[in-house]
Length: 242
Length: 302
Image 1 (tube, helix red, strand yellow):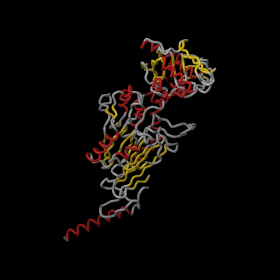
Image 2: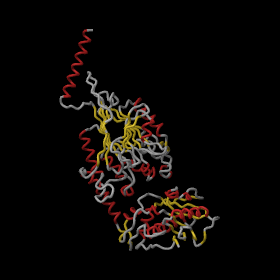
Image 3: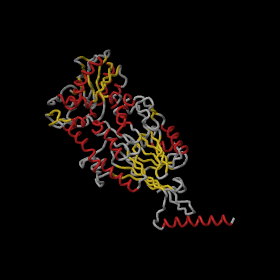
Image 4: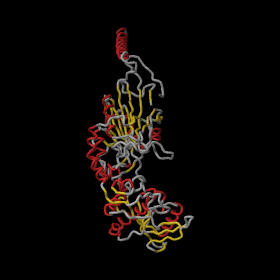
């Protein structure tokens, strides 16, 4: 209460105004409106049926903390982007994607052993991020490598081979089996979030060219799950410390 | 002279009896009008309640429960307005699957009166928002987005005046700057206009030209920021003629409205109820028979 109410009883002059404010918790003490529940039911049923239908089989548990600089689940996501997006990019831009870089924080859940559903893809990637392809100079790729040296994190990659020493200094980095050439440019697929500077990946910010592929990361994952029968992605030596 | 004195005495006596009669029924001050404002923000496609095992909000939320609560309050006071401060879309697969159709249909069933636009309401592009408009039987009020070069042209209002029990309630809306928050390809030619200038203009029109008794700003600017960015708190202080700001965007859980002082020295309420339909905000305005809430000794109980 801020100030006392002043009662005023002179003739037709009525009482001073009053304002009350509060919030009301919506919890199990409030009965659900049956008409609303009935209305939602068919949407819910369709949603659950679609989300829970099996798309693929996963032979082993995958979590994002199961590796030093690369993880099975991160490799899976980066490889999915390469496999799903390269044909689209090739037909639109006439070039091949050289590499993929995503962010470790963008892996939003693990994948349990067993049947993989659309729900798994939503858990893995709940956001609406679109895949983009940034054409970066060799110089920017070097900036990317020093970013990865500082990050010391298993950011998912595909198409690039990186070896670091125990102090996270890059010893060797190759794209398409060749050392990075500062005079060349490279086509790097990533998410629109990262391209716009998410996770401080500032080397993405001013690319030579930026190509949209109009493909959501989650949809690429779902499409890959649909065509894969059994997931067979492992931790490997694409990004390691020696 | 004598006659005039007699009339004065008579009217005073009549008035006294009238008030005395009512007072005997209740010791509470009897206001002539009672307006209830109910509000949500950042519901983000949360339709079902959180499950019992949820780590943060077990057994909270749910549209069907919200509908029951709203109906109960409307039964108590038919002079109720139901408002949303934006970010209706995005957050649960219901949005990804149905594009916002179910969210709009449910809000229409609950008889929402108006909503403003949040940044996530552009997540399927401005075309995706436009496509869902046939499912929304309530108004979108947004004063600081110039949508004239988009498909949404003519489908939002700069303000709207609702009349409840003779009380005129003017509502205008403010959206957050979309650049940097939403891809340009999604919001297209939506132009963001300065919220403070627009708020000053709209609230003046509502108060002075449309003679509104209450002016409410539906805002998706965000509650408060440590940096310069415009927020509901900054807006409250920088403007006049606004009585209540209903906010969103920052998912700020206020257990009661904040009270700020505006440029003219008057009190402004700022409220926000977190997100995901976990809470319903409720503000009750009691007005005297001149529909005045700014009489001496305005009492704000929060």
